[in-house]
Length: 315
Image (cartoon, rainbow, N blue to C red; front, side, top):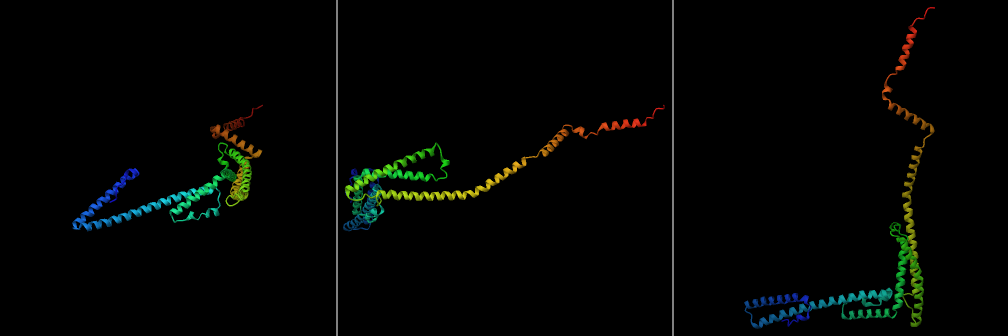
């Protein structure tokens, strides 16, 4: 029914599944043949039914094959589109130049669409390799410019000082100065190369739809605007944080003043305090004597009484 299968030419991981499918088909035909036998169908009727089943199976597999080829075509075109995007960036194409390739957004997945993507990818590669040295210089300049922008942005990061581990800030400053030194040299070299290209080919060398000078001028203006907005944001954060810290400072100073005033004593008060302390220490060292009556006073009273009661001697 299915002809002879060449198992040796097929990928081995699929062999078990294919054999299972063939076995399922054979079992299904055996059951169908058993039913036709019980119905006492003639040989002609059995052949007719067999051909009908065969046609249905062929249509089923043709549909599956068509779906498989369509999925494969979508997969290939998707990979081509991903690769085309990479080469668009390599060639610094503008959005208008990208939109000139109409088939990029097409959903009519046919062989013709696949061929158009292959041709577009080839065109981009030829464009790049004809001026590879110039494109590589521009790529290096853009990478250096991005580093400068990122490092300038870090200057306004409030947490930057708290993350200084292993002299990180010093290393960042060295890198920033080195990048700022290399950037003008790269820009001057690229300008000379683009001027040479324009004289040889008689057309402008465009990057994102504009000349190299216009491109870097636009990037620097955008960078200045971003720095202004970062400065304003940082100033707003500092102003909003100032009122919350001022009362705490005043309170702490006031407490400190009260504490200092309370610790300062006049000489008189210091002497009184020392006298009270000495008295307390004296009473504490002689507790029994302090509560005992004074005996010296009574002895003097008795001596006085005896002197008074003795008669005076007669002459």
